[in-house]
Length: 242
Ligand code: AMP
Image (cartoon, rainbow, N blue to C red; front, top):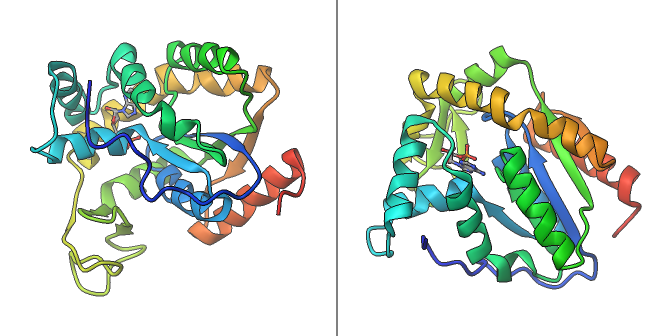
């Protein structure tokens, strides 16, 4: 399968508490931003399947298998990558997922088939989920966020043309690299992604609710407000870990 390095960078420092968290929510709800903030707070390993595919698409040095090249075409159109390809890519990062502080999976699973594969693997490894966080946002707000989103080509910080503009147009405040609009943040792909979310990913909410691990979080407000809400919900579910 291959993509960019499957090692977790930077390697998180051991904190003595193991988190196993999945982040759910439509494209544009802010899962990536929350995943980064939660990773800083909790020290778990962060794996974003979308980030791995994007990095593989940009990195001409890395070995792109035919399956990865096909996956990049699905992604460019806003469609979901086939389950077998995604699962292979996640399994290649097994070492990272098994890190002692646990994991935060962002953008995976996205179908019931992927959720089934993850569940079976976790059972085999005798692992259980701490929580599945579902970020909730009205669809008009999702479209507004996605169409104005600009992403840093290097550090992946996220800006918005009107809500969170960079200090200098098209330049990242954090590292000074160029900002870009993701190929799949254009209107045609946004529609395809939202349809894929409704038909394939939204059923996961019921799936994880039935397993008793679902935590619902309102995704309106600033990243820090959403983070505080998420941490409060995690503490209510898992107890105080600090
Ligand atoms: P994201 O950055 O999570 O919005 O993902 C960007 C794109 O990568 C998606 O629109 C899909 O084409 C692909 N992708 C990422 N994760 C998955 C997944 N778990 N299953 C299928 N496709 C995925």
